[in-house]
Length: 145
Image (spheres, rainbow, N blue to C red):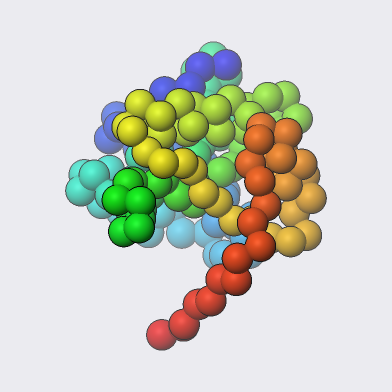
C-alpha cells in the first residue's frame, strides 16, 4: 500500500473516492460537483489530501484542513474526511492514511490533529483510539445558515 499526497494529476481518482465518501453519508452522487470542489481546494491550497493506492488502484483518502489556536498561537489540522473503499476496509489503509496525516502535522509544526465522528460509528472510534486519539468532553455547537 502506497500513500501519496494528491495533486491535480490524481484528481480523477480522488473525485471517484470523494463521491463514494459523500454517498456513504447519504448524499446524492455528484461527480462534477465533487471534482470542482476538490480542484478548488487543491488549487487554492485550502486542504491537503493523501491517497492510498493498492498497486495502481486508489482505495482511500484522507483530507486535512488547517485550523489555528489563538491561545497556543499554533496550527492544528482538522482531519475532516477519511474514506476507504468497502472491499479494502480492515486491511490497514485507514490506519496508514491517519498515520500519514499525523506525520504531516508533525512536519508542519502543528499542535495536533483533531477530528469528529458520528457517535454510532464504532469502527472508526476504535481505530482512532487504537492510534492514540483521545475523546474530549468539550461541547461543540453549530449555527446553521
